[in-house]
Length: 143
Length: 141
Length: 185
Image (tube, rainbow over all chains, first blue to last red):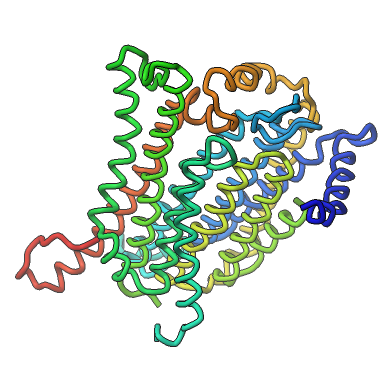
């Protein structure tokens, strides 16, 4: 058991170094949020710049994961542990955002499924899943 | 076509029972370690989905007919809701588990267990239903 | 998280939708790893099961029903405009983060409203070691009830959208002999 723990030691050290970089005196401690924003904007870009509906849903998923990460980042307390009560541990990370995000993930997949179902239905009706082609078909029908 | 994937079939037969068992473990051990109704439901559902991918949706429908998944879908939500009503009848607030047993802490235990069971049932049924509907569609490229 | 960023960029660029859905599965799994290091074990568990498992399967199912390749196009003006909008929004958001509490700060306001009570009292009041479970099912039972209903509604919605389309097609094939016979799914 201890061997396994030791095997992951370098990885843990790496994480500690990263954490020190995020909260250290030199850095503003906001790097995590910036990463989240970068992810969020990538998802946003995919949603608005692509015509393919499946791609749009993937973009929404990326956006969604970035929001989850944002919540979890806020919940973290340096030196805290996972919020499961145990002897001799005083500092726990904030459990409330975990609860919110836990349910949000499952709801997210349910709504994703609903979106994909709509895509399949659109494909059945229009024979395409590209936004502009759907519009072209619509205009054709109007004429 | 299906009989050629011997490796997949054998491995899946080994894997599916542990997946379902693990789902139940996650469901009922969620009070102590990480886990709970949402995760357990998803894992339980994914066991059936794996089966459906390998052996076809119609085979799964023999094991778990559509009316059964829909019943589970409704039953889960109702379990949750009625637990709240039970608390109401026994003299507490809605979803107040303290009154479910003589000891408030025990009441909370029962309440959480039942509620998580409801959540798990609904989530598992929802996942299986959604997948079956997707996979049961005709056509495509 | 840097890996996640790179992967998101790849998702934005690749046009083969099969690769995109696979990547989004891996993206979720990396996210789950990130949740573990951020102490959110329950969330990581859910993300690994849901994001990497179910939603990838659903994406692939959709691709099987629709088409695998994304069409080239959109045009340069559209993507430039989109990029400008995104860059502006990102800049505003980054400006907003300067007022955020620092990462891992234990005096941030988020940790001081109802959470101390959950952490200190849930052991006595609910008696479960896992605080997330006790908050999820007991303190915030209404929330979870609502979420369960959302899932229920989503499943019902999928059934209404796709289950019915199939039935109509079968009716057409039946050539008005069977009428509105209930189909299996």
